[in-house]
Length: 139
Ligand SMILES: [Zn+2]
Image (tube, rainbow, N blue to C red):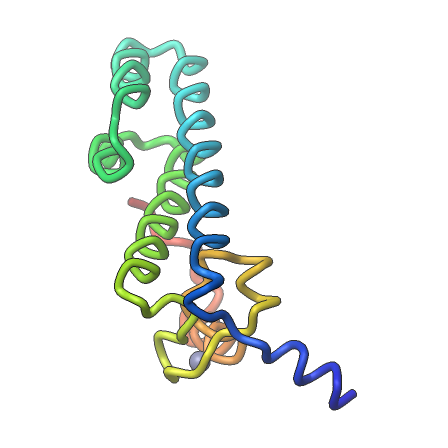
């Protein structure tokens, strides 16, 4: 049990950042493709036009571009893209892998499972409890 605990608490270091950078980049790429496909399938002129823009959009501008699109599937993808962008900013400023609430290192295993995690497991659970059973807010 103790050995396992120490393994789980292994945290990320600067040298791990390129690995997570790549994970996040790949995930963002997949999400953008998903958003584009969803828009193309939606058969609405406005969305078809947006889909063309998504194709050319830079990483930063996509979320802003799609902020008015009110479609659950896309809204979820956009939220994740925003989380990815935030994680990429934390990598850039060196705060990646540090819990937002308690400043402790986030376990490597948790970041492997959720590269966009901004809280340690304990704080995330407390956070979710505080939020109650409220459904995710719409955009
Ligand atoms: Zn924490």
